[in-house]
View 1 (cartoon, rainbow, N blue to C red):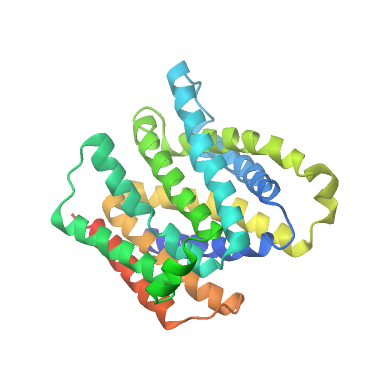
View 2: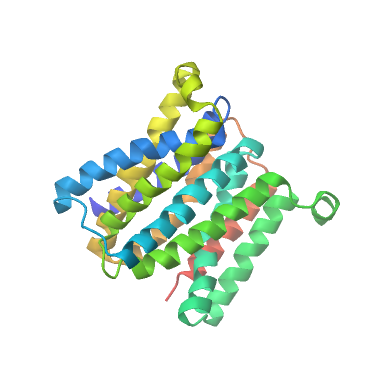
Length: 288
């Protein structure tokens, strides 16, 4: 059951790119991000009460840590996520965000002094090459002529913010449980998202969002956040982070396939080749 849940989590997280793309057709980025984490915070708060008896009281340094987590992994990440999906396809976005483990490996080497083995370096180069292939659509002429679009820039912002979120979280989870850490981060990030969402006119538009948009938000908040996080942490506890993290490689694969199936996004040869390089690089980087 643990392996099945981890595989389903990867598919669920792949589906968040499709849901995000659909939501962006009728909602503004801050409003979508706030609604997602209002739902996620409620679900995670209830889950924490059920599994751990509630949220622990925080010391000052812990409050600073979870605030940084909320601002990086929830606020900045989701603003970049939704703005990016407003501008580029779900499949391209998923393959760029697949660089998360690569960025974390480099960040861990810089911040914590973790060793970058030759195999990890090979994985980093392979994944970066894959992203170049995806962005350039197989032609370096296209890359140099048009450069990076704003959609790609926002998605790279996702990678950097998630890297910061992970590195800060590594320190935070030495004293707080993963579930409590995530719940606090979602609560704080959700509060930070409320104010710009109100500036977008959230209150006046709540009743005007389509049913499809609300279903997408519900998917992102409940399945993509609450269910996904809880199943992933269950896997971490049962089989350890090294084996559980391998399942993350399935996220961009499922996202690309779901985008082709549900959004009619084209599966081009360069997208397939670039995706294969990205996933191979991520696998090599996470090998011990």
